[in-house]
Length: 113
Length: 114
Image (tube, each protein chain N blue to C red):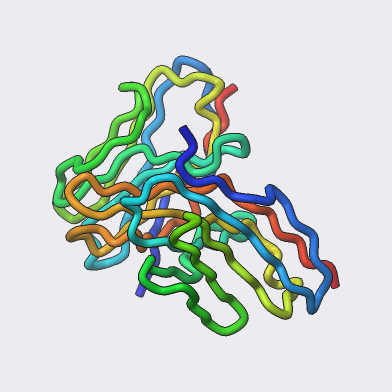
């Protein structure tokens, strides 16, 4: 059972364009939604995160939009740059004694110069 | 502050062998998690250790095991290797406590099973 569905699998964007990656979750117990960025040969690194009581969070060119009723959240990368080319993973975290962090399957983003 | 260090970075084994991977977390981090990353399955949670105790476990067979030492360093072991165990094994550390989902990953150990 895939609890976090991520799309698209791959994305090609021109420099200066907007990259959009979408995720949907099923378990309403999730209470923290981080995004991780992974460059080739490196481990994933926390990029930005949001809690469900907030509908949007922006950090520089990166914005998370969150729709609690639809159980969906998305990452927007404004003014995409070739250096943003990486694999992006959304994740959903459920806290408490039986905590769990579940990752989406990732989106390979390529930004062409 | 040094990041998460994993050794070895690359290794090749044959079916039936066993392997031990090592992880040194960020100083002060008491929680260490292990993930298996493959192209088809993405990031799959193996287990998590906190203060030398396994606190959480994923859905992997008993061939996959781990431990944590008093200095928070962790090792994972895979016995009786199968071809399907070929993957990037990632270690991640966090401060611990209730575990917020904020993980700091190492660069991984890439295991190839022939």
